[in-house]
Image 1 (cartoon, rainbow, N blue to C red):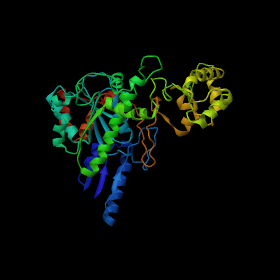
Image 2: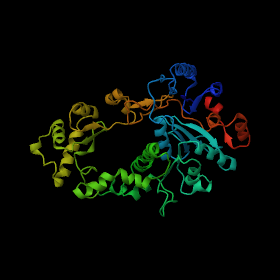
Image 3: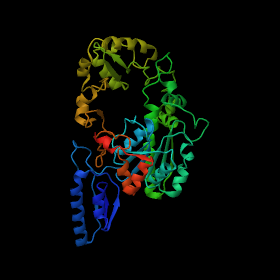
Image 4: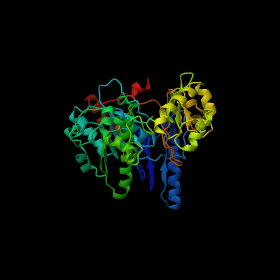
Length: 455
C-alpha cells in the first residue's frame, strides 16, 4: 500500500480517491501539487513492479522565500492539533508545535475584528460560533478527529459546552487533551483569575526576585506564562504523544502555571540545603548579590553582563578589567562584596560597551554585552547561527529552538492568519461538503475570511 500524506487541492484528492491510496493530512503547498502527483505516480509504478509498500510524503514549502526541501520531515508532522484561541501561554504552546511540523488549527470566535495572537506562526484559523449548538457540535467533530486539543479556559468552561476531556475521550480514546491554566484543575484557586505575576507569587519564585532591601519585582511575564506555562504544556503534549505510541491511548494534561514555574525553579528549591540560597534575596551568588554576577553600566549608557563565578573565569575578569587580584579582597568574602562592586562599577564606567566587548571577546571571563532587541540579530555569533529569522513582512523573531539535526523546525514565514482565513479549507479536510459549509456560513455557525486574507 502507498501511504499518502497531503493537504491541498480537493480536486487532486478527488482524482486520487479512486486509487488504493490511504490518505492522511499534512500541510502541502499547491505550488508543489504536480511534484506530489508525480511522486505518487512513480510510487504506484514502482509498487506494482516490485510489490513493496512505499510512503510518499511531501512537506509544503514554508513560504515563497524558503525553498522546498524534500530532505526535511519535521518531528511533529502528521500531528493534528485543535487550539482554542486564548491569551499568550496557550498560543505559544501551539506555535511550538506548529514550528516543529504539527498542523495547528486555531479555533477563533466569530464576529471578532482581529486576533490578538502574536504567536500564530504556521497556524490555520477557523472561526466558529460556540454560542450555537451547531457550533459546539462542529467543534466536537474537529476535536475527536484530531490528535491534540489545547484548551486555555478556566476550569469548567468546556464541561458546560459538553466538550470536557472525559466526553471527548469516550469518542476518541487516543485524544490528548491539554488544559493550560494558571492554578490547575483542582484546588481552591482553580477557577480564580490571575496573570504571570500572581502565578509567580504563588510558586514562591517572586519572593526571590529583586535587589537586596527592595520589594520583589515583576520581571517580564516569561517565567510563569511561557516557561512554566506554554513550554511546559508543550513538553507534556510531546510526552503524551510519545507514550501513546506504546499504549495507543490518549490522556488529559493538567498544566498549571504555578506548578510549572515552581518546577522551573527546582534548582533554587533543591539548592537551599547546600547554602547556595540561604541568604535573603539579592544577597546570594546568583541573584545579583555577588559583584561577579551582575550587570554594569558602560560609559555610553549601555551595559555588560558579568557571570564570572568560577575562579578561573574570575581571574580572567580581573585581567580584562586590569585589576590586580593581590590588591583586592578575596572573591568569596561576602562582607567585601560591596567594595568589589564599587570597584567593578567604576572600571566598567570607564569604557564603552563596544570597547569592553572587544576586550572580553574570545576570553573565558563570562562577560558579554547586554544586547537590545535591535542588536541581537546583528551580533556575529547570532548571525553565524542564524538565530533570528525574518518573515515575509520582514518582522524579526527568534528561530525555533532547539535545533534538531535530522528533523529541524522549518517555521512558516508567511503572515499570521486572519480570523477565519482557513475555515473552508479546514472543514473540507475534516470531511465536510461544500453544501454543508455553505449552510453553516449562512446560519452564522462559521465565518470565512479567506478573501480578506488575500487583500
